[in-house]
Image 1 (tube, helix red, strand yellow):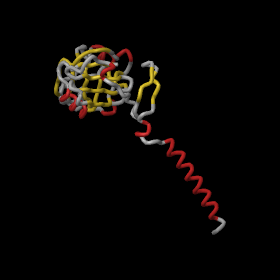
Image 2: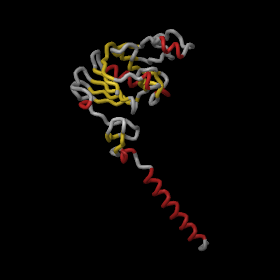
Image 3: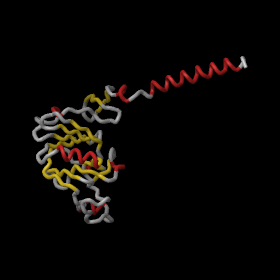
Length: 200
């Protein structure tokens, strides 16, 4: 038995050292929170959390927060909301358009809020996907717009919910910004007609 003890002690030391190295590699999320990430698309260094959401500030994108502001970051696939009085801030994961060709960037605003919106694919969507239905009524479990939609001043562009939760965090839409249904319900209550929107 005494001949086995040095082998066990050596094995324990080896395993302990290996665990310590691995623990250092698998740092907790809070330890990585302030690690800068180079983002050449923005030409500088930005801060990201483990989920890859960039920490953004409304002042860098809007002159004011009149009527509230929504910033849709298509690179990190996140939507930021600030209330007009800046007491409410929300950050939601999103789906984004499938391709750069389908992605519209720039300033717009919320022009209509719709509960259980009816979905009608655009002619270009039907051309790409002729098997799609011409209409899906609001409230239907297969409605791509989910339970709520914020219509933007750009025709056919929406911020909406989705019943297909696999889409969130991915390039999966034909131009719209998608949220989990529970998130669009909250945002729907916070946003108003006239809320400023910027897609970057």
